[in-house]
Image (cartoon, rainbow, N blue to C red; front, side, top):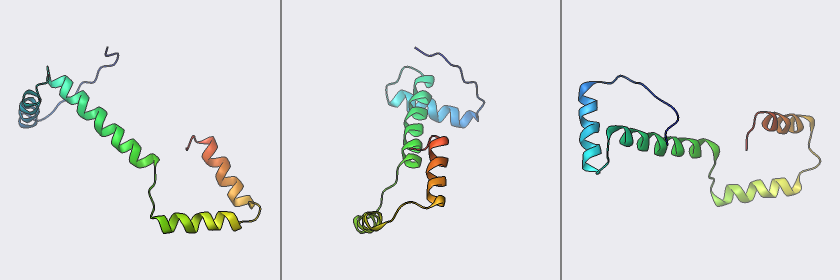
Amino acid sequence: MATARLDLRLDEEIKAKAEKASALLGLKSLTEYVVRLMDEDATQVIAQHESMTVQNDVFDRFMDACDKAEAPNQALRDAAAFTEENGFK
């Protein structure tokens, strides 16, 4: 059940298109359509910003560098502390 409210103003043409799309998808309301879009888009944006994909050879070179690395220097310790303090995963 919804616990928050969002009020917004939009162009009549955009609203009409959204209502049509909502109906074509068989959704009960424009609100259901907007909530669905927001949830899907927010999930995608968050995933894009919380993950990174690299080519296999780049990952292999990174792992090789990690294996050969000596004890972390102060800059690396500071970077690790920064990420932990700011909730980065």
